[in-house]
Length: 378
Ligand code: GLA
Image (cartoon, rainbow, N blue to C red; front, side, top):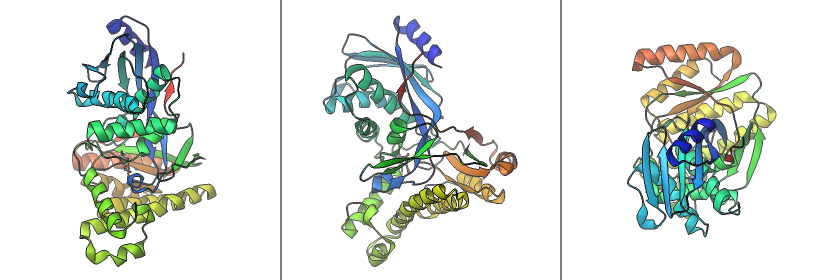
């Protein structure tokens, strides 16, 4: 991909370029916990956004998206925001870097990627992290620390793209390390790398191809529910809430808010249980927690959809160890932990049954846990 992007860059802008990349992510467990101060357990994957970049000596950014065959040009002041939604991700990263005292000057760029869009694999975080990393390297001698790079991406979502997301996706994209999942405490930002080699198991994603679109979505509403319950409890986030505390104020909450909070409290504990189980090599417990998460996301948090619930049912029927909807929800993928000897049957059955019911097969996405944001050397 690198040579192809650099060639396109040269054709369009006439100069050489430097290439940067950042990754999409999976999350084994810990969904909708990040903005509640809880724990998440993601890893970067071998699906990237890659950008060829060169400083252009002007005060303008000129961007070409190969995948969309679309071009945009914008200045670096707040009033220069581009109209195109896709270009606002890059504009936002420039602005958030500048707001933090970082230097950004005009540059040309061509980018492309293989992170499936709208599949819950955080293609937008990969795009943000790629540019946050690149601007730090090109203009700031890498003085901006890695957490700040992740926050630049997160603030871009908040301030320029309308998604009030947590820190998980950008964290995973920036901090990702080959063969490791990472447990992040989203309150203290302490994090730990867990080597992930599930001997005898495979991790596979099934993309329902139901498009997930978090912009202007009920995602922000979920967050508001959690914040309302936290305020009622007098705690900063649901990280500090327990089932008992929630039961005590149940009659002051509407049913929806109650169920949202109930899910978050359970999910917070499940991340810790899964980490302990992994250290013991106890994949049965990991899998059971994944199914519990799916049920909670479907019934209490209500971010699943018919197609994803169906894929989850098929996984159960096929004796898959663990399966659940992954990411923000409202479409996208399930993540499945499946014993190697059950893998072929599971994939064949899921394809056949899903196709019969919905008229197309789910896309099978095998992932390798990989490095996050980096400069792509020759
Ligand atoms: C999206 C958000 C993340 C996180 C997940 C749900 O991916 O960007 O911050 O909240 O949903 O776990």
